[in-house]
Length: 345
Image (cartoon, rainbow, N blue to C red; front, side, top):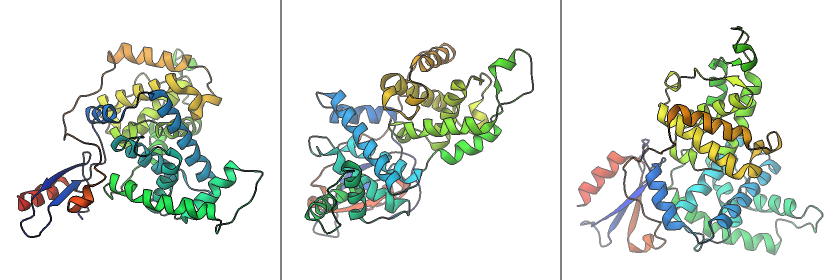
């Protein structure tokens, strides 16, 4: 398996193996998906009741966050679990894997390994049980209920790992938020008209942006954009909510393409407008009006919201029987994938 980083999403291509009795399947891991690839995958996995599917996902996210907090996982572990969960249901349908709560537990278990915060699967299941049944009855790790769930999730874990292409590289926006907040010197709108040199304290700005970043895990933004682009978008929304003047913000100063920055902000604003009660900011900002005002103001500056329709590899839903068709080789670098495919043909 190659260890070099790819820059695009995953795909697989079959090839004949002239050196063995079975055909080989090369599956390339691609951490980021283009908007058009995600749209095509969503059309394939779409259910008749899309709103119900979204509610099931929100329930799964709540389970991940509650269980993670109970076990004192860091934010990166819970964020990784939600990113893995989002990816899983892009390449697998809810008809094939209807229990989103089981999938949430499996993703949290994989994330705990990925982020080096390992917990036994039984510990995760027991924590989830105590959250769901706070008044009892108490059960132990040796309970048949826990053991039955463990066996079921061990099988599901394999599907999660195959969907990830065994690629455990996940980056988060939080570290960029802290760094960018120190350099993003913005004034309060109350003092801009007086040409004051009074800048706002970066601490509340970073705190609000941190909450926006947590909400971003409930969207597909982390699968489309790099973490520093997500971080800058979160800071822009936070600054606007805190009534800071960010009209002069230059994304290129932070090595973020303007198009990526605009799409991050607009997609997050759409999420807040449509699903505000499901977000971390709902307690502080229960009215969607500020988010709608931000979207209107940004649309005036950048034009109508439109994703960059970049071409890319045609992606299919995951084939559950792929392992039965021959040896599957997971590759992390597109150049290595091309060389191996050329050798096999």
